[in-house]
Image (cartoon, rainbow, N blue to C red; front, side):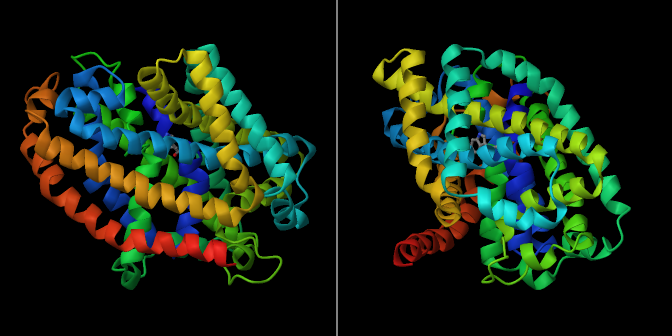
Length: 437
Ligand code: TRP
C-alpha cells in the first residue's frame, strides 16, 4: 500500500495541481477536484484494488481473468496511457532534477521567470529528460525498485513536512491574503462550468494514478485479508492532503511575491511564463528570499519532489514493462530498456516545446485516463461476477458496498461520459491548433 501511495504522490500533487488550479480559476477548480476525487475517484480506485487483488496478475490478464478476452482492448488503452504519460512526465521530472541542482547554488530571485523560460524547453530540457529516463530505466531493469520505494518511505514524510512548513512560512508573508481568497473562496459560476469539471476530473485521475491499471498492479500483491475500503481511503486522503497543502504554499506565495501577473495574468508578453510554471517560478523565488537557509530548504524540497516523481515514474514504466513481458514474452531487462527508450523518444517533442507538452498532457488525462476509468467502472459495475463478494473479503461488516456498486454502474459512467463528450472534440482541436501554429 505504501508503494501505491508512492505512485499517487508525485508531480501531479505539486506541479500539475498548482498549474491547473491557476489555469482554471482557483477555488472553483479545487472544490470540483475534491468532490470528483471522493465521488468518482474513490469508487474507481476501490474497483481497481478489487480487480487487482482478486486476479493476482498484471492488468491485461486481470481483465481477461474476470471478463474474458473481449476486454483486452481496454488493457491496450492502459498500456498506451502509461507510455504517453511517462514520456512527458519525465520532462517535468527533468526540470526537477535541474532545480534540485540549482537550489544548491541559490536561485536568483529577480530572474526566476527568465530561468524557467530558459530551461523548460530545448536542449536543456532534452538533456535532463534523457537523464531522468535513464535513471528510471536503470531502476526498473535492475530490479531495485523495492529499494527505491523504501527510500521513498523516508523521503515522502519529509516532503510532506517541508510542504507544511512552507505553508506556514507563506502565511507570514505580506500580501498573501489575495492568494488565500483566490485558492479558497470559490466563484460559484465557475463551479458550474463543464470545462472546469472536465479538468478537475482529469486531475483527480492523474493524481490518484487511476484509469490505467497502475493501482491494479499494486493490489495484485495484496493479501486476501487486506481491507480494501480502508486502503483506498488512506491512498485518497494522503494524495488529496499533499495536493491541498501544496496549494496553501503556492497561491499565497504567488500573490505575496508579486508573481500573479507572470503566472496567472494574461498570456502574450515575453515574460509571461503561464500557469505551467506556477510551481517552478514561485518556490525558487521564495527560496531566494530566505537567503542562505533557502539553499538548504530548496535542495531538500526539490530532492524530495524528485524522489516522489521517481516512484510515480516507476509505476508508469512498470505497467508498460509488465505488459511487454506478458504479451511479448520478453525478459525484464530487455523490456525495460526497449520500452523505456521508446518512451524517452516520444518525450522529445515535449522537451522541445511546452505547448506540445500541454497537449500531450491533455490527451493523456482527458481521453486515456478518463476513458480508462469509464471502461473500468463499466467492467466492475456490469461485467465482473460478484465484485461485492471480492471487495468484502477482508472487509466483512462494511455495509455500503451496494452503494459503491451503484455508483460504478450509474453515477460514475454518467459523469465520465458527460465529461468525455466535452473533452474529446476539444482535445482534437488542441492538437489541430498545435499543427496550425
Ligand atoms: N499520480 C502520479 C502523480 O501524481 C502520476 C502517476 C503515476 C500516474 N502513475 C500513474 C498517473 C498512473 C496516472 C496513471 O504524479
